[in-house]
Image (cartoon, rainbow, N blue to C red; front, side, top):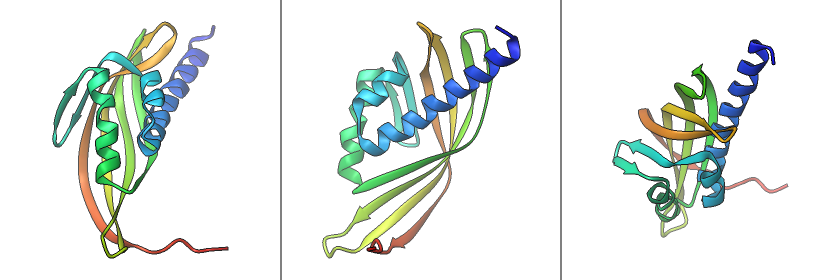
Length: 148
């Protein structure tokens, strides 16, 4: 296969892994995360370091307990690929909805840059390390959804 085509296919597969990471977080779906994380996965957040895919997956119920809903949007992404290893950065906007006892809702929005390390294992690009860098956060009221 032409080297440029291989690079484009690899970049698309890495982007898909980042998109599935976001989807798995929003759906609290451990099957999605399992499919894109190596067993030795390490996740570093402002709150600490989690080592091992099983322990990272255990963060999903904590996410569900902390927020009514989340929505992650993957934006800019650039990775350097060297054979079966890739390092790079993925930008993301992560909105986290909270609902108060009185029914009011608010959004905690994070501007995130993930520092990524992936490895191609058995033909699939898997995260082996992700560090969440929080550039800033914003809080705002969430209005009720419009009905059609």
